[in-house]
Length: 372
Image (cartoon, rainbow, N blue to C red; front, side, top):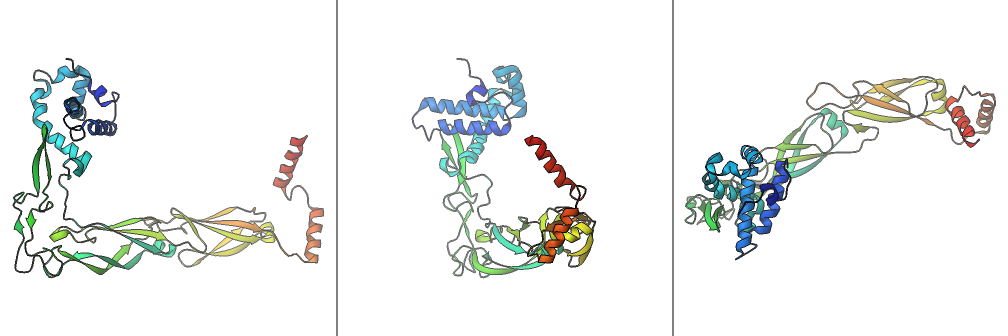
């Protein structure tokens, strides 16, 4: 009987990406897996077919040969012949099914460091000034640390762990499932290859105890809200002498009284009086460095106008340059006018011309034309 097209078997088009190919294979393999279809010869045959299809198409060279010559590329010794496929099929399928199904079908990912300690997340809030200057922070981290009594081994002082008799110290056992075999984590020693017969009384065999540690962390200048700093080996201690996990410091930045940040730039809104906007003037603003800067505005400044102060913004991570600071003038309309002030404004309005408010005059002229 003629063999079905490999792309058709997996339900994908030619030119499919590696990621899409793997996703399609996962779905088909889940559908026809023998553990989900016990005593179903047809499902087992389809399961083997999709496995063969994926084995060919995931390899760039084999896939190119198949695209050009079809199944003939792998018959009568082509590309290593059928024997080359069958020889590596069991091990490659073992790898892919551990990746796909984990413990559900005899899983346990190959090469996983079971004794490794967990990573820790620590949230730390700093001010915008600390983001600008950088900070040497001390943090208190409650975590699992290596037991001092047994030096992390988990065994009572004077004793040692013994080799696991189930796996012979390998930490893994191999079992057959249908037409292929799967290597899984040893259920007796949980992948460690050793068993503690006489556990430490302080840590009860875990090799670690709960303790609060004080760590010094260097927060560099230029960090932003959401920055993650990885401190290698400062997470939880591993089980029974396993390697420690990592500590991840997540930075959050407090809102600032004057500044809003956009990357390396700072923005500051400054309310100015109507008379200052009309006549021009000078005012001072604070800077993130802790000093002050003078801003001169010309006569006739409109509300929303921005003035750029170069190199007065935030530090840039691992760079000598700084961002810029933008001062936005917001013209404030006078409130609670006295009688005399009202008279003066009314007088000013009477003697005003179109040149005094060109944008306003132009807008209402266009509105008038629109209605007409």
